[in-house]
Amino acid sequence: MFRVQCKNKKYATGVAPCMTHPHNYYIQLLAETGIIGFLFLFSVLSYLVFVSLRQLKSIIFKQKRYLSDYQVCLLAGILITVWPFSPNGNFFNNWLMIVYSLPVGFYLQSIYSKDN
Image (cartoon, rainbow, N blue to C red; front, top):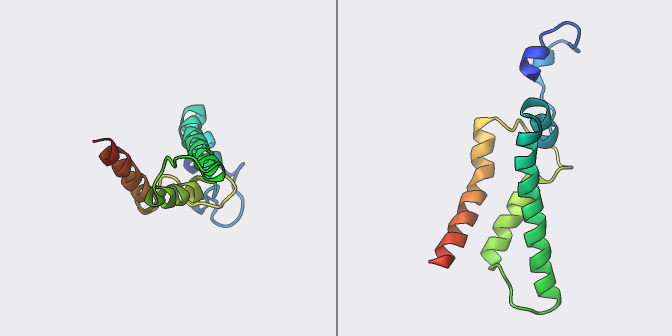
């Protein structure tokens, strides 16, 4: 609802207040979609951290590795995208979501092609 409320003179700051966005996916999703949208992104972050730590543990203890090098690179790209302390663009921007979603599609394809 930022786009609606920024037009209100009570909340307006600067010359063009409606041209800004929070520059953080987590804050934007909390403000615009509530806890449900936030939990979606937070669950993605939790999964990525879990898989990364599991892979790191297998490397340290010289066990069988769960992921290929290709999958690790894709997960690193996704993790950089959803890292909560990095500045981001607008979550609902079309071209940003296309660029950010490409590694997700390649990662899911690599998982499902490995199972078959």
